[in-house]
Length: 166
Image 1 (tube, helix red, strand yellow):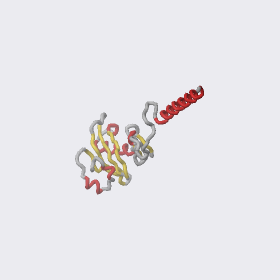
Image 2 (image 1 turned 30 degrees about the horizontal axis):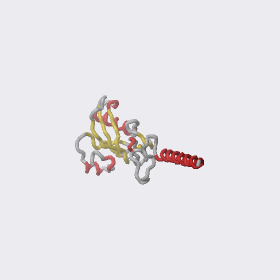
Image 3 (image 1 turned 180 degrees about the vertical axis):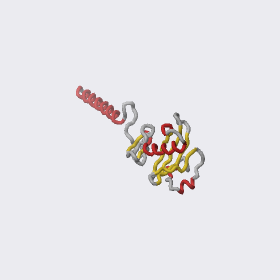
Image 4 (image 1 turned 60 degrees about the vertical axis):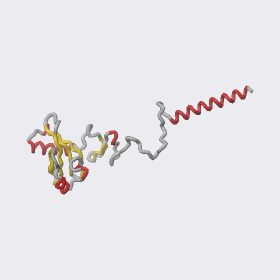
């Protein structure tokens, strides 16, 4: 009879230890379930762009630099922005240091972006430009309506026309 009590205690202890191990395996420290029962379900926030960059984390593929980056931390199109700033500064008789160009899309030598002037660069407009014989040509600049049929006839890819000719 004494050996039956010992055996019963051993079985109870083994069951308790097994339950604790199972609980630790299937849950995290804060009790959330760690096992994904539906392996076909995509992870929330795990979407990537064509370059494999995590969109939810604010990254996008920068073709000229061949890497993922956050555009508010590091500029992708520094050379293009600098060249376009020179053109806009000359066209508007503004200092280059107060001419602020941001390239939003660059594809096949066609670019879309924003332009503003002044030390604070609060307000500005959009622009569309294309590289012809290694020289940037400004096809549209401002805040008004865009002649979309004319712009599309110049060969602008649809990606660069987002926000201009949707």
